[in-house]
Image (tube, rainbow, N blue to C red; front, side, top):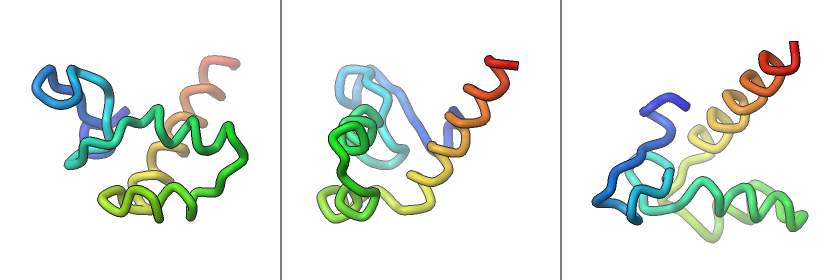
Amino acid sequence: METSVISRSPDVMGGTPVFAGTRVPVQTLLDYLEAGESIDDFLAGFPSVSREQVISFLEQAKDRLVAAAS
């Protein structure tokens, strides 16, 4: 993932990948979506994450999956 969307530092959440500029783990978004929650629900619970960060993350993940399957 681009560093502008995801960051990882041993000083922030023990190195867990988080949305850049926040302490919100990317895994939390995936857990919300897996549970059937919406992006809006996630954003309401984690206002420090922007919609643009979520969409960018999902687009990059999609692109990597499609490229890996090709």
